[in-house]
Image (cartoon, rainbow, N blue to C red; front, side):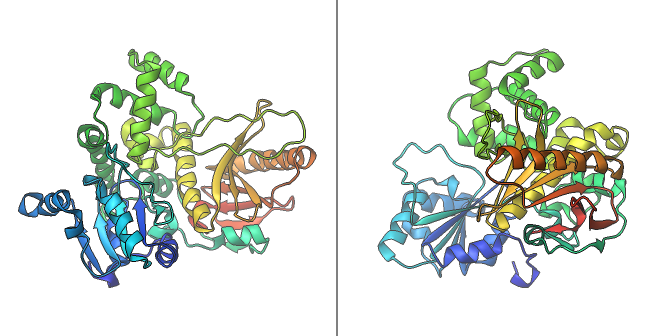
Length: 424
């Protein structure tokens, strides 16, 4: 790869910082999200364990003598290290003995089930999470609205331009896969279908020694797609599979399969926000379910652009997934965290971003402008709720709207923001 061809990612700054601080870093995330390209951009030499040349010679050498594949100019990229799990300990030991910073960049698209003694790497190997491209990274957000400016109350009103429903659907079905950026939407959808097939037929068997039922995994994936952007419990998933697919799956099997999907970075659930409440209000601890990219849920549902045009209710959930995929990346870019809020009194907020200094801001996510007033009213209600029941209150309130031609602050103080204009 010529470094001049590299499309910058928001994780680049974090990688540079970690290389200055630790002996090695591990870039983790779903396959095809760009880890190898990013690792190559930041490295001066590399070894590709997935390279089939010479009957996978690099992998065989790593198994025989890990130190052989670690020789090279630092930072040295060790791509898909999980193919030879003992490399983790080898890198950790080398970094420990050498004492220098920025020696290795490891990339991995799964967390392997390693039976040997595997050191945590604490203090030697830092982890960095990478995801499919956000709209800002792919060039589909103009970046006129800054998350940092929202926190600092310095965001200005700005015209952002029209965005059509068709374009939003196209971006959602396409997803954030780097390989899908420059091809037709129909062909881009095939990437997500191929991704699912590869997970079911190849990758699951690589991360677990236990036998798995491919048909049940496929049923689970489809159920997760039907419950995308929801707080469906495991029991609800079991019920959904029974009702829709007339098939049974027990709790133990479901939990095991969900763990495997998490280890493959196929799903990434959003944790609940737990503010310090002065009252006896009980906060729900359910996670909001998400695939790592909305295109995967669309592929599993067979939801192409034409079908989503005719089913805006389903697209509403997929659009929320698109927005929260980006919010996850933007939050981490400012050293923050994305959560959501629900309690047992029907109080709810789609997304809450907590910054590293303790401030937090609230988002409602709506597709059309006709939903903004209701969303703003809920945010204002929740703002009063937190003022009366919590030791802190939101730094800002914002409605992310799909189809708005401007970013502005309403007279009631609530921001209206197009997702196609947001950045960290």
